[in-house]
Image 1: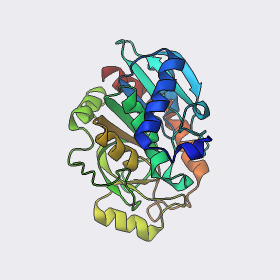
Image 2 (image 1 turned 135 degrees about the vertical axis):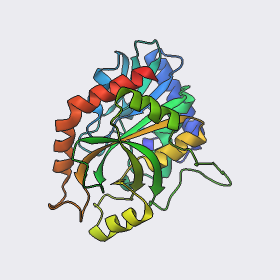
Image 3 (image 1 turned 90 degrees about the horizontal axis):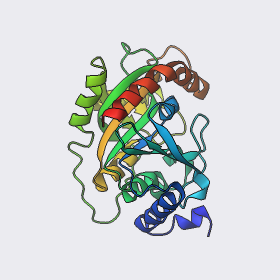
Image 4 (image 1 turned 135 degrees about the horizontal axis):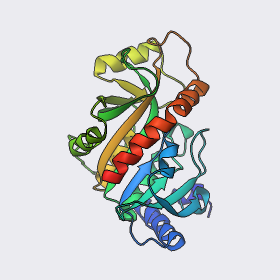
Length: 272
């Protein structure tokens, strides 16, 4: 059975299978924290502690090698200085890849099956606030899901009132009191948003726009995890930016900000 066929299995059964492989291959019975490292955030994994295990994503049930340049291709177990163990999910599946919402949520469900109680979701995104410069990290206070999809199936009703933990945002600001916060809107992608769509998102209350995170956050809440979301504003969004958008620009902004934001995230994670 190949990976795409496995995605037809019950998603929680598949997550349990993936967690069993991670436990066997890593030798770690239980993980405490999960990290999803988006564009620009990958360097944090090198700073948070000792790498105990590194498994190619394609060798774990339900995971795929990443389809996007700038994203990692492994699942790592890292022991933190406080003896907690972090599961670093370097293989994020984006909704626009067409593998379905179960594949997008699989990392969160696997993390929960590994025992994780706290998850940190990061991304690179466009900004709607012209006062923020590229390279600005922003705490996610809430989100607007514009994908027209949900990872929840059937009559599964989950309260999202406090989806992004105020406690964890306060903890992050204890590391850097200058961190702003904002509302993140996820579009389906993979095309960038039009100026009119960005204007719509701003009217709806968004400060940031991107192509990930919201579906993962919903799946994490369903699994009972506490969530910290942090965006790296890599560019001003269409209609706000004076220049055309490109993925190369996103990668360049992420690379330029990487040392600073990786240090920031490592200091936050160690306090979780």
